Figure 1 (tube, rainbow, N blue to C red):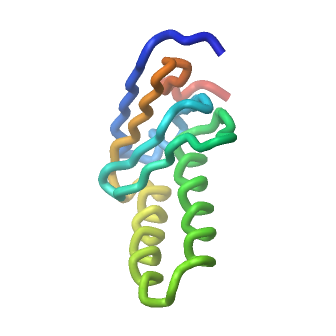
Figure 2: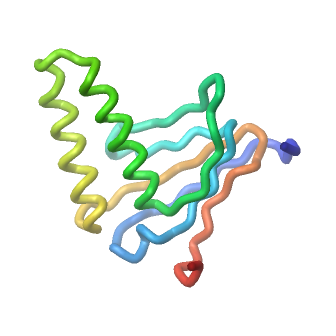
Length: 116
């Protein structure tokens, strides 16, 4: 991929329609939701993806599933709390900020709801 220089894209998700905002993440970008203290960083063989905000939330839920499979029961309370908040966000009942930082500038957020 071509290097366009560092980029940062941020969108506030505060209503159900915002879950349809398109997200294109390159294999060098990180995705963060500060209000939930969630962050997806690129790793060795990270794959790029194109999805919507709802799809990003689902990716974080999948990561929680993997984490729960590895952790002790004492930490499950925290992942349950995060999971409940993600579900509220998926229903448009928990406003949050989605941030994508890409050192090569190949990621973006498309705010046009009319994309099918």
